[in-house]
Image 1: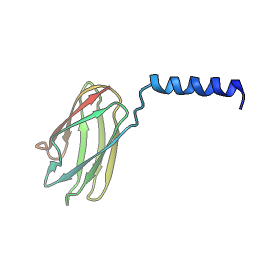
Image 2: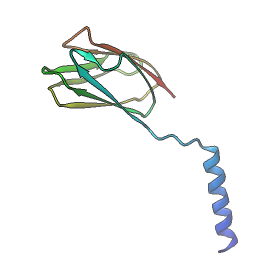
Image 3: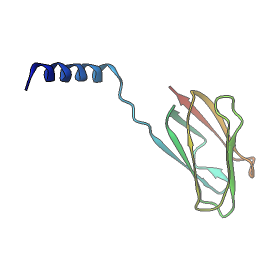
Image 4: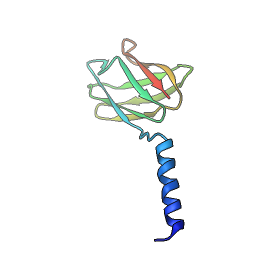
Length: 109
């Protein structure tokens, strides 16, 4: 192996030590008995949250938060909706059909 290869390898190793490795995570939130399976969740920008409806009736998950507003639409039992987190801060989540269903997502950098 030549000197150029070792310089490239050394530079790659040095760079990998300087750049923190972060793999996005997926968080599962269930919906059963007109409630979210968690009332609060900590996640990071780039993570995804999967909302699965395990109730006999439809849910509609949404947020009007300044951090990230969204409306996942109505979906029936057994269906899933996915949200990708795009900004840090607190997101208040609700169900448009069942106003008592509420949760908070704390999104870090």
